[in-house]
Image 1 (cartoon, rainbow, N blue to C red):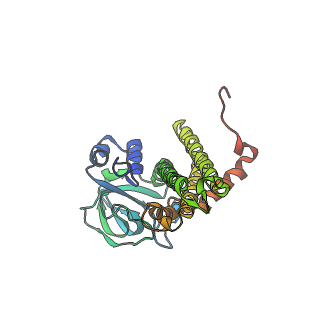
Image 2: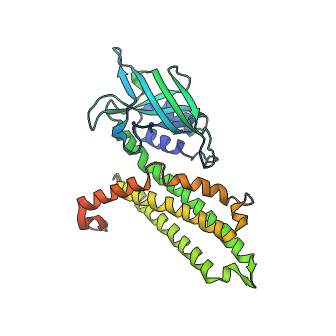
Image 3: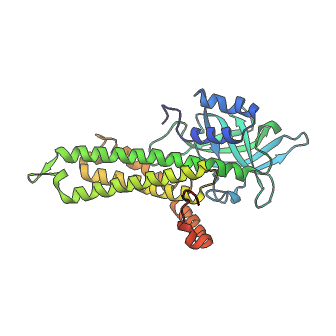
Length: 314
């Protein structure tokens, strides 16, 4: 994904800027990311007791100045790509209003008033720019660098996170398919007790179940993308796809390592890298449990309509 300039968090940032930025903001903040000239980051998650999956808990605050500009104070962490990023989108609190208390701001790494406190070491492979804890201590942001408008920060997060979660799912399903490819290639040649692994029913069951799970993930992703294309928020559909794809990746990596045995546990294949990478999938952009709670809320609200599909002519 990095090679094609479609890795997180750049892909999500490009999509939200294309959707809601002004023409001048697109020229200054979007075009350089699209051209691959800079990397970017999205700063929302905070240490306890700040906001994580629940943005209403965000404590980083932006104070409006007499000239209409803003100054930011607070702390964020696990900000993907922050160390390599030049362009940032940050979500901060501008009021105590339950629905319009957050605002999205744009800033450049060269602006004074903020710093990276540390690059947080993680269990999985490091991506460009790592995962950082950052602090704001009076970062000055001009009025022109407010994204959408004051109080629209929650809207920005919803516009950004839905499609971004889907592109996560696409990458995860691609990795899951790679696990199946490696497992099948090894099973086709490895023999034990006079029988190829590929001819053992237990191996066939593992591969067949994983292939089915990947296809289910692909269908859920396409259904969510269809709903977004129709102009919907696709919150229910995106949550389903996210949980399915994340767990499918984890199970596919585990399955492939098991079939490859010690070879899979070693660094002779990419499987151990994928396995460590896979564990984050069930946490980033909302833990499994958060998305399952979202789905239950829809179930309570919609009842039998939860399963209703739009059909032609309806």
